[in-house]
Image 1 (cartoon, rainbow, N blue to C red):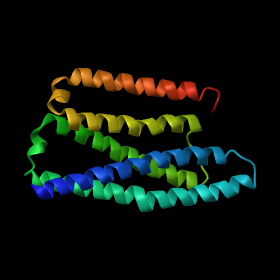
Image 2: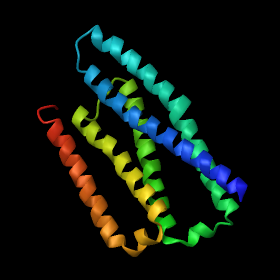
Image 3: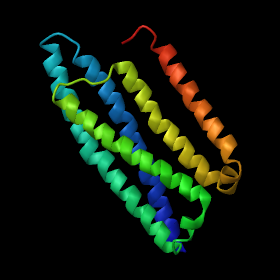
Length: 180
């Protein structure tokens, strides 16, 4: 049992580290996108700096934290003899972890495009994209903490998270009104 609890501690630490990295990464994308709209030589200087910062954050914090988060999660399944796979709250959690992996891959693709000097999204769109990870984090934490309640009241949970997502996106849109 102690090995499970140690794995759980490690898992929580690297969940926090991973989300810190992914939140900051998309924030850097916002600043990078805005820098690419500037005139030379400021544009080139900032582009080089943001590319460097993104690469370091991705390779030194975000990806290693993701790997350790996943490995510790798999170990917890093993330590509990895979029993959580049969529970509905875990199905919800794993579904949103799949969404997180898609988000992670999409973020990596955005980083590569920005490093090539290509902007595909506006800074406001990137601000909204940044909130996708927030919504994923909310769903996963609520699914884990509330477990049985979360699944028993799935319709209320779904409605609450959709409403929260819409509210967050509206706030982002309002706060950034007038920006591109």
